Length: 212
Image (cartoon, rainbow, N blue to C red):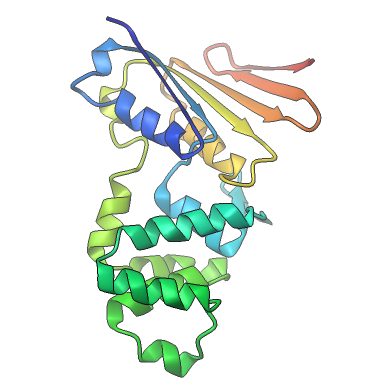
């Protein structure tokens, strides 16, 4: 049988991950990711520091919606043991405004997570991410959408809204770059406020514009 798989926002990345699952990959005809993320690490960086890296070179500001950030924070908390979860939820509810002395008094695991969530400086993000508990980093790494790339066989459609306030469009752009040697992909950018579509067909190497 020929299976289509489609996902939106974070679900787009899960769809890509599923399409490459070797148990079903030969049966997946196409997979569509609309607004998915490239990696959990890059998405967390964008949501916490309010910045994105454009074309792997330039760092630019990006403003996520408050609901996107709060959803992300709750998702992190839900992955923690009950004691840590309750402590960090309380701290988050108070605005993540602890003094350096209060931060230092936190248990090691909670302090590492708190420091990452409270940080707004993209220059120190990498160091703070590496200080997260190993089990949490391992769990997030399993969500990387291209983990199953060696087994992916389906036609891939990547779509991104340039005005997305939940997952920055740069995430889909990075997915497209990572898949540049994969022959069966099509990347499309939307600017919904302008009702314009920019379409890049990788198999032919051209860009065309359609206004509707």
